[in-house]
Length: 315
Image 1 (tube, helix red, strand yellow):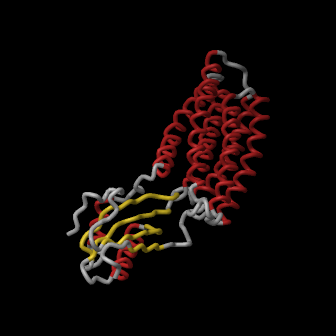
Image 2 (tube, rainbow, N blue to C red):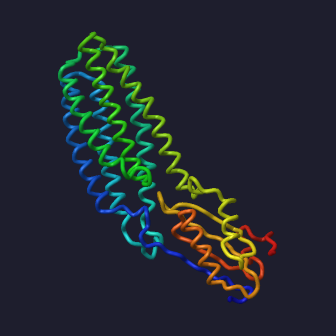
Image 3 (cartoon, rainbow, N blue to C red):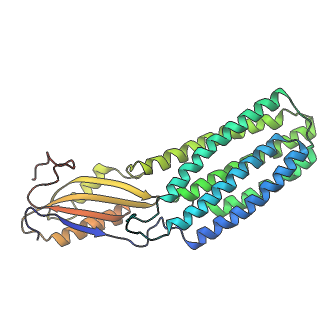
């Protein structure tokens, strides 16, 4: 038991952080990057030769996509670097920064597509629909393979989610190119090429905004999605009979899937502080998925008067 006015800190570290990107993920990113770069070159040549904006727009998207996958691969390698004297949490948050940049690049890409589509709608140009259709189908197949490769990890990794977002945009772009090629080939509708490019741009805006909001929330140290601070506090008060009250609770994420918490706990006199801290750690880890916990024991009232506890009165 600590002195009535001392602070007792307990750090529960999980060295196998869920956000750690495995070698398997890096390998998938590299495979996706190689396929995307190859298809980008094919679409650039095919779009220029056929005169298709939809193909050129998709090629531009895939070029940005290649950069996004390269950044994601770099982020994946950096994320597994160990902590050092200057970065005590390591480099895991790089994946969130990469996701944030990917989202911003999507907005820039959408602006370019819209501009080019408007120009093409005002001044239609001849298009070789047969060549356009063949290249678009090839792009559709490649993007489907790449998206399948990345999608399994996108739900818990902002880095992979950013890469998947770009590939999804490519897939939509390829579908639009296929539809435009068929419309031009069967009906002679030259306007279908820029029109369907605009549809893809609108669809991409929603996905880009969701990724931007998600990564920004993590960078701003927001409470992880699915967690309610009041519910966590209530669960911690019931974690052990020795706990009188908990306060000064902070919940945030270092990166996707890596939840962290700090909390002050007030214990009854002569309580077993080690047992209480173990109970708090167990509740946070098992019920709320928090892997890194710092517990401060307050036995004579909270002394952290500059950290939000000045007005707290012990029970």
